[in-house]
Length: 196
Image (tube, rainbow, N blue to C red; front, side, top):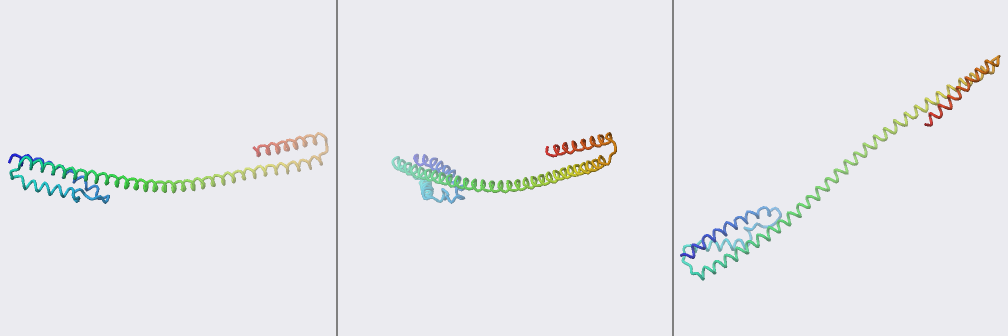
């Protein structure tokens, strides 16, 4: 009777350990990894623990106890090994799933970035086109203004030349010539300013 009492705590400890291992397995179910409780090793261990529970009140010899201890240890070790293998398999499957999700997320981010970059490029091109058009329009307006000023100065020069031809005294012709030279100098200055 003494030997069966020693088996009872060992069987209870094994049952608690297996229950803890079984609780780890549900997370693997999502990755198509079977739970520990559905494996042959776990079922054999549970069946053996039930058998030991049934033998708990039966007197056992030391040699029979040693056989039961050995069998319990072997079945427990097989269940633990199976649990470790299932855990490694689930970990590998979870890692592959995580990497796949990461790749999908990275592709989504790249597509989003590409779309945003395309939008930004479009906005930039639109702004640059608008700025170029505004610049060209302003430049055209300035050129027109310079052309109008030069045309006005040429008309004044033509008018002054006609006055010079009709002028009676040399003093008056010199004054008109000076006015003509000032306007010619202004035309040259305007053309230089326009080029700059």
